[in-house]
Image (cartoon, rainbow, N blue to C red; front, side):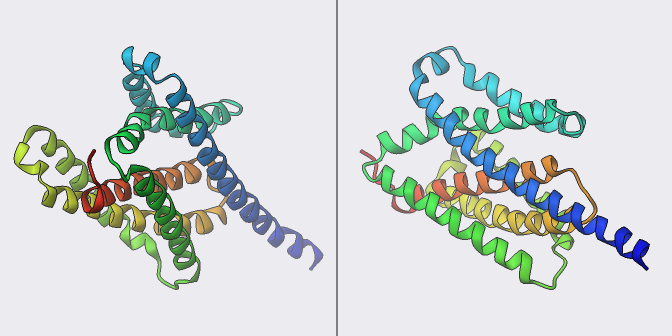
Length: 230
């Protein structure tokens, strides 16, 4: 009997450790994003005149594509996982600067978007932990919706008619909904896959991308609704 209790307790310990590590990595990523945004603001002229933000953007894409390889290698996983949010903070600096400088109520909208992101993430966390539904059934639908969102974003670049206020509301509002659902889905995944000892870096990165993108789409949505250009 003593042997049985010992064997059964080991997955529980692993679960708690994996889940807490995933959330600790996520919290670290959010803090590093702020640091990245500060670096981007301080060295904006040098970074953006040289086009380094495009290099960092492609580096982020590369990190996501190769994530399953480097996330299993310590200490490389800590280094690359830490670089990703720093790059994210630097890359979004032009957008944040445009909001603050280009809109008279830009700072207020930025703060409201941050607050709304925190509220929606909290609501998603409560829902993911209390619901009896298996949110995994949304995975395929969310992936297809994400592809559609990316397709619309690309079409906006080449088709001026899709750059109207109505289409921007549609795309940004759809992005908010999609990433809010992704957040709930991934929070439940952190809880359930943690029980199987899943890689905490992958779980944390998924959750970080959900909330980071939800913030960006919320900001776009609020700018369309109430932005007052200077």
